[in-house]
Image (tube, rainbow, N blue to C red; front, side, top):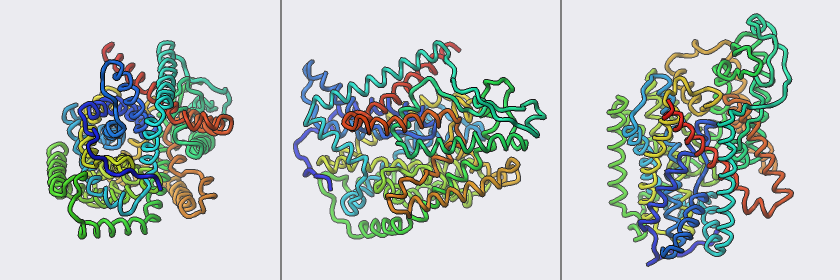
Length: 597
């Protein structure tokens, strides 16, 4: 068990500069997660990056007269920054654009920011209520929280090491940024092998007698974003995505095109056919991910029941709050306030009836226990699983209502995921001896900054979701999943593409089996089981993304073998730098296009 410090007294924590730093870095890092979320449906934990950036900033500030920047101040900074950076899980890369694609409804920046803030703040309120049970009673590890605490301790014990990591973070960001600039200015294309696969039947009748590897998406992208993501997610997920890409786009796609179940794209030999064919592939891809997610939830039933029982027991026998914790009366008032805010906005913005809105908030508590326990034990917040469970729930509760299916589920799934993310930060604070009520305050300010910045970035990046998303440039796989499930409840299975129902059955079965083996097999075996979620994801993103992530995953393995010490010190921050550098530069080019247009 990690060494835990006693609760600190008379040590600066919730200072103005710590909160403002966290809000600023959270706003900036939220842009990275919005960008990568619309590319691959994933975001990254930014706590360590925020802690390094803040440490370096105030280290320089000391040369100009600033007082020393303490470890607990930096903890408040990383707490606020992490809350802001994780704002993408509140709906910006899944249900919100899915609603825009189906109904055309897009909120203005102020209203969208208010909506996203309301979803995230429900998660913060629930995290505050679950903190003591999850961290002090059940003592769940929350590995990202431990990693951040250990990093902070090491930074303040060895200042030179912290600066070395900061320089690595900034250097990697600079390299990725420069390469992105070169790519955009010179309009560098994707490149790769010139192989081809013969086609027949319906495809040949339309003039597509062969499909080149570039048609099918197999290429190398002259950028480092996905290489960095591959290094962050690790070799298992990256390899699983490569397996999925080969299966989907290399083996199944030619057969689907030949049978005429999906049309080929433009006959230009270098043209990608992703946009034309993904409408078929998203069904088996989504089926595999949904089946895997639900299987994992079902197999977690003992832990879920234990969590619900322990939470209920804690609420019955809870003692008076300690000074460093949020007072129970304040927490209760906060929960009531966020419930009223959420229900009011659901009705005012989307016409969702009050009882469905109340159900969405109340269901958050149950699913937050699930998400928190999974995240606490494994380090992985089950965003996908939460989304599918809530969509299925509201599809049954309010059938045929797309808006209710997406946006009520947005509250439940987004808030539960946000709650789990927040508990990682609370774990860091517990280890360092921070005041949890100060962290809760920092999280409120963090999600406010993240909501404003993240919503602005989303509206800049995809001003026209119906035309821009589910394309090779913006695959938006999480959007595809939410959209597909909502349309299925609305339209029924009769509107699905030919052959897709059988493909869903096979893919769903495979996802359930792989998830069960992954969950039940001994650890030495389970780590070799391909990730069904990653394979399913590879079905609904261009193959080149899987290729580049695979390169990053392989690079992480090679580096660990040939430079173990360097890898332990710098791999995570270097990979995060690559993601941040290209993401922020990509957003800058998007803004440039707006002014040019």
